[in-house]
Picture 1 (cartoon, rainbow, N blue to C red):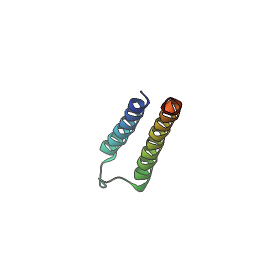
Picture 2 (picture 1 turned 45 degrees about the vertical axis):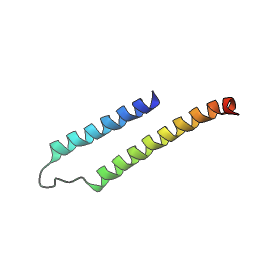
Picture 3 (picture 1 turned 90 degrees about the horizontal axis):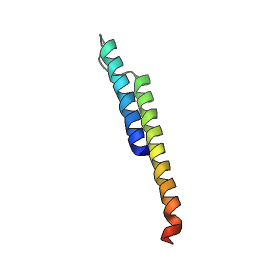
Length: 66
């Protein structure tokens, strides 16, 4: 459930960036450094959330394994 929520969040952020690019596409068709940095930060936060969720799931089941 958490993974699908993270995936939906990332998809929504990417959609927002794409929409802004379509609106602002003029002489410069590429992304700015700030946009790339924001996207990278969002992906880093999403990856951190996924790792935290997996770690929590494994630790909660660890007692049953031993």
